Every structure is written in C-alpha cells, then in structure tokens.
Length: 137
Image 1 (cartoon, rainbow, N blue to C red):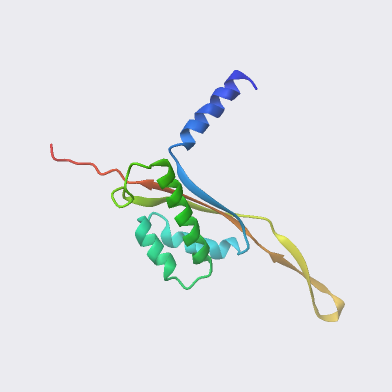
Image 2 (image 1 turned 90 degrees about the vertical axis):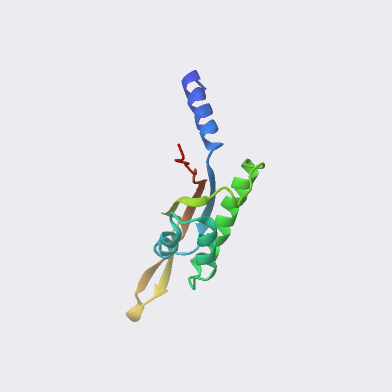
C-alpha cells in the first residue's frame, strides 16, 4: 500500500471513531415501506424516536427500533464516562438503500408466468449528541 493510501485510510479510521452508527443489512421488507418508518424518526431525539417506533403499527418499525438501540449501545461503548440522559442524543441520519432482489415466478392465466420481485433493504442509522451552547456572556 502506498503512503498516500495508508494516510487516507488512517484519516478515515480516526474519523469513524467519532461517529456512532449501526447498520442493518438484507432486511426482507421493501425499501419503500422501510423509508416510511425512517422518515418518522429522522432528526428526532432518541427517547422520543424509541417511543414513536414502539407504538407504531408498521412491521418495519420493530426492526428500526432494534437498530436504534444498537446505535445507542455503540455510542455508550465509545463514551463510557458520560451519561446517556445528559448527552442529548438525536437521530442524525437514517438512510434506507435497496438490497438484493430475489426474483420468483408466479403462475399466470393461460400458461404464462409473471415475475415477482421480493425486495430487501439496507438501513444505516447514525446518532449524535447535540451540543448545548450557553449564551450567558
């Protein structure tokens, strides 16, 4: 590996130490349905987002709730000295990307066949703490 490539890799490695995220891959729901749930919690404070996901009737909300808990646990692992209640965590970004599509055949009238696309998705959720700025000067 060249020096420039190694330096860039080290920079990216250092930058990831200050990011707190969790990734869910190959979730067997369509990305369109998952984006509806992701849009509900984008930018929300973490405790409020967990409440919204818990009481949502959508099936995808259970998986996003579990993923958000994982992202919070990752934040706690990197910030052992600070308390979760005082950190003002919020959902910084949540991205839903299309995953693998399984193609199946369904019988149709007159001996034909229709293609069924069973979609999956990848979800990436990133949490961060809001900095409280004091203007008491």
